[in-house]
Image 1 (cartoon, rainbow, N blue to C red):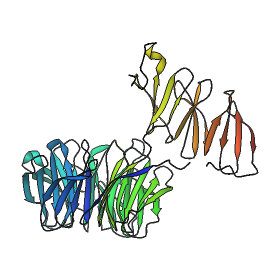
Image 2: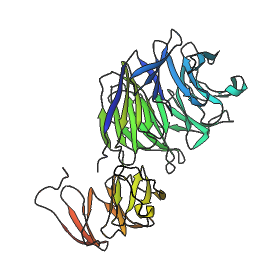
Image 3: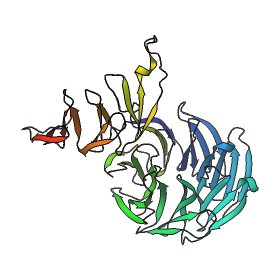
Image 4: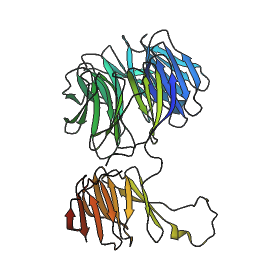
Length: 433
């Protein structure tokens, strides 16, 4: 079952070459740093530039929001980190940080720390509460360090990608890496962590036109994504949708299914090479930076998969989580048409597949979730797994004990009380329209 992934372009901004991008968590803002030395903040709702910082005459390869301080922090080819207050536009701080170009910056999610990486092969940790003192230097890479990113599940650790063909995982407090992931044949440009709790995964992209998915607990490459025609310059695990985004100097962004690794769609906006991909945590917006500007897109369906039984119990999917509410619990009070109802929402737990369809059976005792080419039937009250299998489509019969599945384009199976009753092959292909 392909993901029903609506892709809606909400901003198309022409500019000089974009080297990095970031998204503000609370405002509709995209931050881009440019090769010409400027940094812009775009409001993607009003389609306007709301802030501009003229940083330097040299490329600004990295810029990030530090929102709890109302800051934009930049790293540029003059080896300098600059800090601006984005409300007052004043420069708060400026210091020489490395002995070569700065490639990447990462803000710690809770501590007053900034990581920087550089062509001088070093990664440095800066403490802004301690007068921007460099409190640690991480050594071990043998070439430019292209990107650093904190682990969203353990912000005491971070990963780095380098042109020395490796990804290294580090711990704050230790100047040598915990371990090194080797397997790329050419320089590694970009790295990102999987956000969900269940998979200890890292993705990396390289100059050999591929992206690799790593299990960082077992320290093994578990999958390689192939298909780009040029260097892979940006990678991202989407924090809430089951997708992987890879951007390349071939001008395309490929969208892959994060569970099956199937290519879902390829985006090409004709703005030449892709240099950055950033996402809004908890939202569906993604910013992409190119040679000729930037794009903000909204991904996925806005309305969730949902089902209601005959007694007013509603189940719906919020990403992989299933939630429930009961209309009966509201009593018989009068409500206006179109009025928003205050429902008590109960978390039922996580679903093993990404739900694209939820359906109660007619008597309401069971609910089927379908997605990723699989189906799971749960008890509706407690989400206990009763049956599962592969299916492109699923339908309940009127008598509640029977259901049918379409496995592929040529096979339909009918089940009664969870046991297969019969299967048949229609004379014509049974593809969904």
